[in-house]
Length: 113
Length: 112
Image (cartoon, rainbow over all chains, first blue to last red):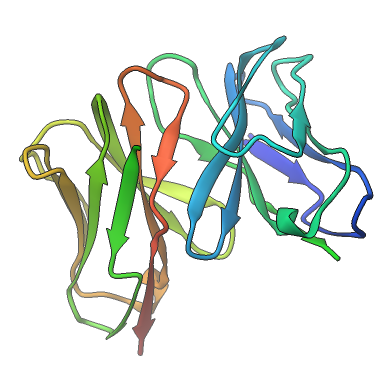
């Protein structure tokens, strides 16, 4: 199994550009989420979804949009990138019930100039 | 405000040393605490602790939770260079099954 797959691994944007970070999982997990990781601040939750068609905000949702049209995919959109969004982004998933541990993707390193 | 604090922020030891990493939390409605190891890329799961005083062990790593004093420790004995990583703890709350609160991590560097 591939687990949680994120693309791209690296991206450089100019301020104001838009882009979509892709996340796909093949474990049939209902729960998917996006985190950003900044030095000294740990992982902070951006958005999450508990199933297709259902999304909600985390701790730091501003500047990001998500949608969940299928169980497998949970893309994260930056509509107008800002330097403050320079970070490492992780997608994570888990079954909605039962085992609580999160399975993480390998991350996307994003730089906004 | 829910808070998870890890200490120390970074640590340098030599192979063979024993290290203790700390995670304290101030949250309402605690459910469980999880430890992750993060090398270059994705965090990987180590332990989940729900009950006080019960040690979880995996090889040279062990962890225990104290729900009265609101902290957990992660011990690594006979450290190896492969233990070099950032160790993250996260707290999961009862009232919201969808949010994990992470500490900022402890960066461990094991020198040969």
